[in-house]
Image (cartoon, rainbow, N blue to C red; front, side, top):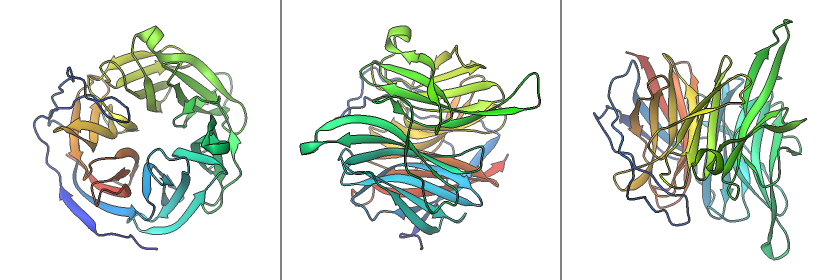
Length: 368
């Protein structure tokens, strides 16, 4: 299979500053009048200067909500295909790509009377590919019955296991990340999966941990919540581990709508949060060098939503924008992979023909 559209080549230069504002997650997006401004500096030692963007899928009526993973020499990109953004007919598509972005194969996962949403990929400690999704189940006359996180596994990237439920019904487990812990009294290493799950009615995020196909339960309740932290509607998230410290980013869609950066030391029971002062939708985070991380997601800039790549210094919390990707309208929900000095970024956007489609950006990462 080949890519279905031409590649756009871009050169990125840093702007000295930019304005990021906050937004509210509703059917109609409203921007709070007090939306914060954030100055983005151009100082950087690890800069992506040149990138290409290729459309890799656009055959479905609506394609959205991506993630990206590197496994056994190939990229795997997953996303939802459906009639529209909120329809109840969603299924999961998984593309296998080479490192030039060429599509080699496509698989799909469907469940009867269900809408499968927001798939995420990870590589297990057993070196299998795991896919997480959120199943919304419908009964007669399209009545919503319940929602449940699911996982699927693949040992070859071509076929997938039957579903395994995990977590709790109606708590949206957003992403799974793996942590390696060495026992203090032995040489054994324990691997655990962690992930944040949110519930809108509860205005809260719980941290879950365990084995996604075994025992996977609440590790710490109300890690971020309206009741405990006075911060409304925390939801989509990402996290990574640096030795025995966990770092997390959480989207919010109430009051100031500003994203929160959190960290916690093992055993990840007590969390501290820093208000980043800007809105970030569909956040994805990938560790870089020199105490910095790559961030990607949807920002509010120049009176519209767009998908951006950012860099964040974890020590001083300084943020800078690398670039805004070609994007408009319904867009964002990126995945990030760094491999051999190339940063790959999947995302969706409806800037072409007002149709939501899937794109792959490739950044050349160079030491300054």
